[in-house]
Image 1 (cartoon, rainbow, N blue to C red):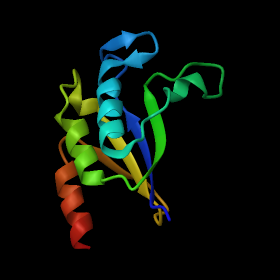
Image 2: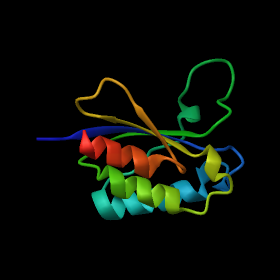
Image 3: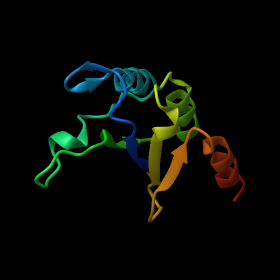
Image 4: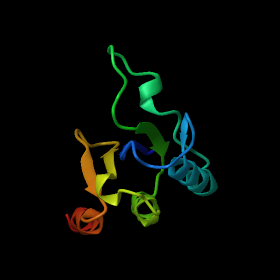
Length: 117
């Protein structure tokens, strides 16, 4: 049995990179994901996206099994982002037809509303 959560992570291209292919805070997120869930994000979607241009924002996409959404969001938004206002997490639960968008300013309020409905 599984409970799939689709996640898209987007943030500013200006965030600090470890090297050409890796953003430092994505490494921290992957370390947390592996320690908590044994799962991680793959590569930046720009490496596999179509079109004739490169994406102008980093996008990390994954489908996680049994992701603790509130813990995940708390960790992501606690990180020392250079431009925290540009961090967005799109989450779509297994039985949902659309994504919910979370940002640093409003994620806790949205979680509370989802829990009470």
